Length: 157
Image (tube, rainbow, N blue to C red):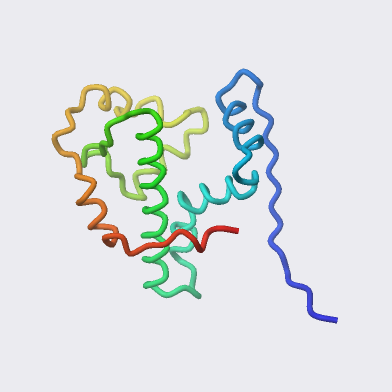
């Protein structure tokens, strides 16, 4: 008989209170008729975290890692376009001052009582007050990410 392929083992159980937005989100994913639950979850996780997870992977070339990042940016940009279209929003990008380096995220993730930002963070207030004069244009973002040299079809199960 053939050799059995080793599989990664991952189990995640989360039971949010029924009145929370997390419960609404998980019900939407679970009851979606277009994609399977696993496909929906992995598609978004791959776009958001896969390039960072593979950043130090020794078996991937730098070119493959950059292509993976371009693909992720493309998927995220498509989601931005979909949300803007669905909610009739103008597509904007945050001011350059909110582009963060990986090192600046550690304080956000260490504060487990925070939904998004540490209590002492100036971001929520600044976002309300900030003018959008320093925004990147979508065309500049697209050019910086490879001018359309991406393909997210490889992520489909």
